Image 1 (tube, rainbow, N blue to C red):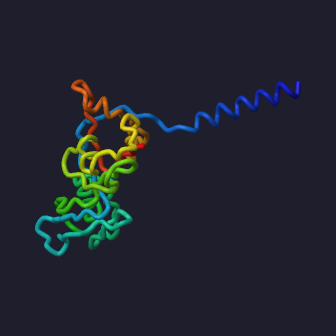
Image 2 (cartoon, rainbow, N blue to C red; image 1 turned 60 degrees about the vertical axis):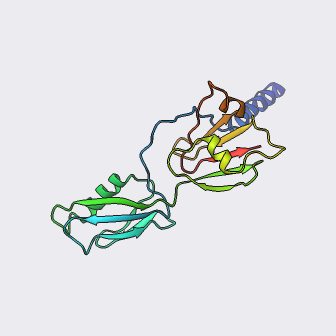
Image 3 (tube, one colour; image 1 turned 180 degrees about the vertical axis):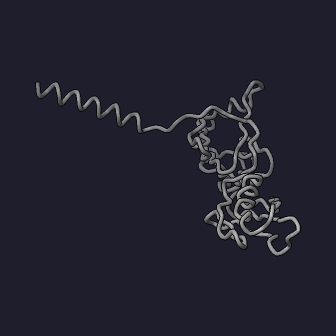
Length: 189
């Protein structure tokens, strides 16, 4: 009886550990996403008819900005419209019917990272829609030892997970286009 129990718990333990050993594989989603403010971006905050409250502010490394009367407010991760609404709520006790506009003056946070067997691994700015193929080209292409059919895109947005990609599929006429998002890491083994 004791041997059966030991065997049962051994099998259960192995099953549990094998379930934790890998990450979720994502389906490629190339849908347009609204721009989310990131760390190190520079914002123009405008309060209509109130020059004292209007200013240009950087998003700090902790993701917050500082605005008079509102104080510290989380900016990273929000769209400009969401941040404007949060600032409006914060100003309502002090300003009668505040009209707040947030404009992203400088986009400094939007980057992708390419690592592994590429000529120039590193961080690359993400300006507009950049495909996986374009990011590999920015990094100087593959080295002689690259496994081009074992590429993995690690996505760090809300869902997290990994997207396995084969280079041969990227360059085939019927291949699926993979558009990168800010914070993605491309690993070329």
